[in-house]
Amino acid sequence: MITESLLAPGHRGCAGCGPALAAKFILEGAGKNSIVCGPTGCLEVFTTPYPESAWRVPYIHSLFENPAAVASGIETALAARGKTDTKVLVIAGDGSTFDIGIRSISGAFERGHDITYICYDNEAYMNTGIQRSGATPYDAATTTSPAGDVSYGNPRPKKDMPAILVAHGSPYVATTTIAYPKDTIRKVKTATETVGPAYIQIHTPCCTGWYFESAETIELARLAVETALYPIFEIVNGEIGKVRKIKQKPVEEYLGAQRRFKHLFTMDSGKDEIAKIQAIADENVRKYGLAR
Ligand SMILES: Cc1ncc(C[n+]2csc(CCOP(=O)(O)OP(=O)(O)O)c2C)c(N)n1
Ligand SMILES: [Mg+2]
Image: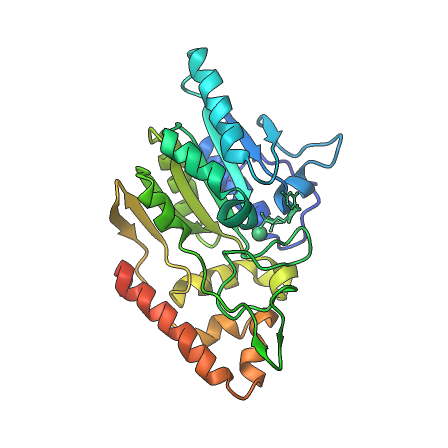
C-alpha cells in the first residue's frame, strides 16, 4: 500500500491516466532522496501547471530532446559535491525517448552516467494530439497513421528500445507495466541502486488516445502482458534475467478492447493483419521464454 505518495493528488491528468499511476509507483520505488528530470509531454504538462507542482521531490523540466543530457549534468554536479546517494531520474514519454531525445540518451549511456532513465510508454505523442511515435504498435490508428481504405494504421512495428539500450552496455534494462505495481516499484528500486545508466520502460495505457473507458486502464495493461504483446523482462549485464511467465491469450482480446484497432475487425482483410500481430506476440514468447 502506498500511504503517502510523493506525487500529490489534484493534478490535471485524465481520469484513468496510466502515466499518472506510473509516476506514483516510480516515486515509491525511488524514494524521497531523488531528483526527477522530465521533458515536455502529458506527464509534465498535467503535473506542473505554473505556478503549481504535484511533485514532492525536486523536478526539473527539460526540452523534449534533452532530458538525458540534463540528468547527466545534475548527476555530475552532485558527484562533484560528494552527494552520490541522491538518485537522478528521467521520467519521459515515448515520443521523447524513442524518437526526439534518442541521441541525448545515447550520449548519456555511452558516458556511463549514474542515472535511471524511465520511459512511460503510452505508444504515441499524446500531449499534442495522438501522433504516431517509434513506440506505436503495428496497425494502431493514430492521427498521423489513420486507418482507412488504403491503410491499416501504423505501418511499422514498435521500435525495440530496450535492445538499443542493452547495446549501449547498460547494466540494467527492464520492462514493466502499471498493471503490476509491485513489479514496477521493485524494478525502479533496483535500477536506482544499480551503478551506471539504467533503463526502464513502463507500459501505460492512455484511455484518451487508445479510445477505451477510463475504468479499464489496468485491465488493458494486464491484457497487453497476457497476450505477449508487451513482454515483461529484465536484462542484467546483457543477459535476460527474470521474465513474467504467462498463459498466453489470443491477441484479439487486447486489440478488440480499444478503438485504435477497431478497423482490424471491420475491414475485409483485417483477419490477415490480426494474424501478423499474433505472430509478433508469438515471437515475443519465443524470444523471452514467456511460456509458463
Ligand atoms: C523539439 C520539440 N518538438 C516537438 C515538440 C512538441 N511536443 C510537445 S509534447 C509532444 C508530445 C509528447 O509525446 P510523448 O513524449 O510520447 O509524451 P506524451 O504526451 O505521450 O505523454 C510534442 C510533439 C516540442 N515541445 N519540442
Ligand atoms: Mg507518449
